[in-house]
Image 1 (tube, rainbow, N blue to C red):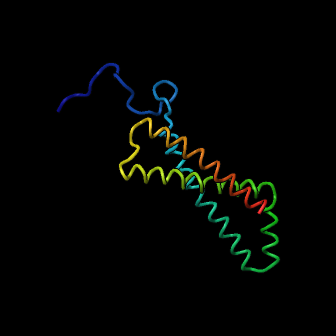
Image 2: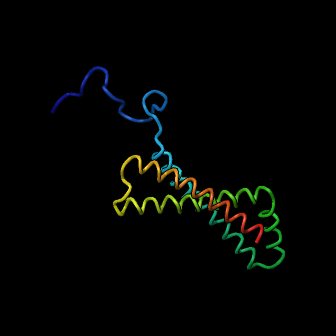
Image 3: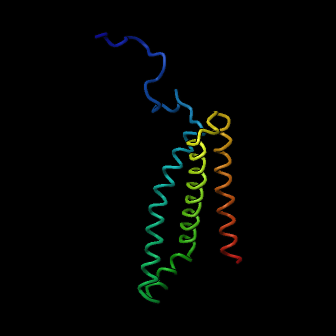
Length: 134
């Protein structure tokens, strides 16, 4: 069995030293965002479940719950939840394309990442415009 190499290492052993050795890449940031939005969707689904429970409980509980959803903070939560849903969907489609063996080159991965982010904002904005004006 060989002994561990002594002296300075040629490269860092772990990317935890972000400021000195590791530079964030778009693909890693988007992967992290995909996981965070997945968690956010879980909590947003609890919000929707609460709304359904209030709806089934009668007019008074529903009115109390709806008052929170129509407040600025409720609207902000719903907007964040809907954007997280759209981002998770767009990025999931991106992963399906990769699973099919397409767009695996680095420049294609960056382009599809920008498209997924832009599409998530555009579709979210369209949903909110339709919800308010239709």
